Image (cartoon, rainbow, N blue to C red; front, side):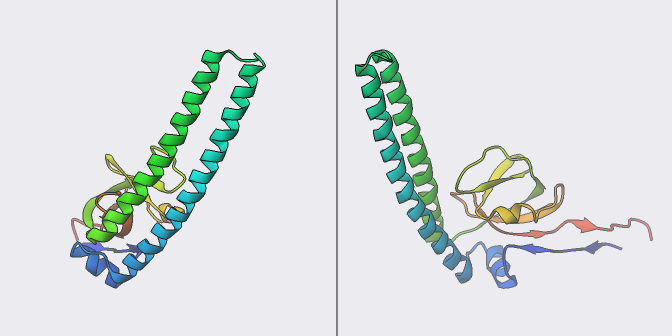
Length: 180
């Protein structure tokens, strides 16, 4: 006798019904629109702060190089590092938000089955990662990571471009008995 237990994570029964068809539900679209708006607001704050920080570092480096505290090649190196980090951070945020927008416009969901692991590859200020077998996917809500049990078999509903898990359901078998 086989008994299966199913647990839906981060979705309602209607959401999962639409996700099984490869589509986002209306509620998931509404939530995704709110998250995109929130990330775009954070993006504008981030750009303002990075530009302000870059200006302050530039002024400090210019002042220190005029006072001959640091040499000009070192000052140029510091500026290259600051500008490089600023560009990397803003383009990384912008790329992620653009992928979410494209996923929202496509209204498509990819279905993936696999066993989960809490091992994270990278920390990011916008999302948390969840390892599913050999791939790493993103979670926008940190509390969702605690709802997954390591080693359990889940069916994940993932936004195709951004790799964000929007819902999941446990499909692992519990209490399997081969001989009764």
